[in-house]
Image (cartoon, rainbow, N blue to C red; front, side):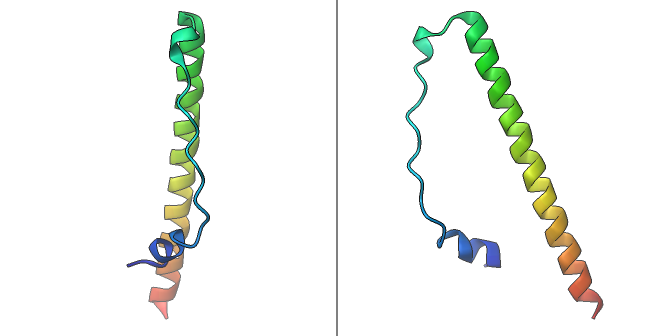
Length: 65
């Protein structure tokens, strides 16, 4: 078990927001909504990549010693 996995349990749990009612949105609004979700996914993937790079750098640093 990694350190990250152990500390995830210590973070406060946030309630999931209710799903957005898509029935009231028009086609253009749905397309804009999808675009915003895709942008958020890209942002999350970039954060994951940055964290993985940090972890790799730290592991490489401590492996040298």
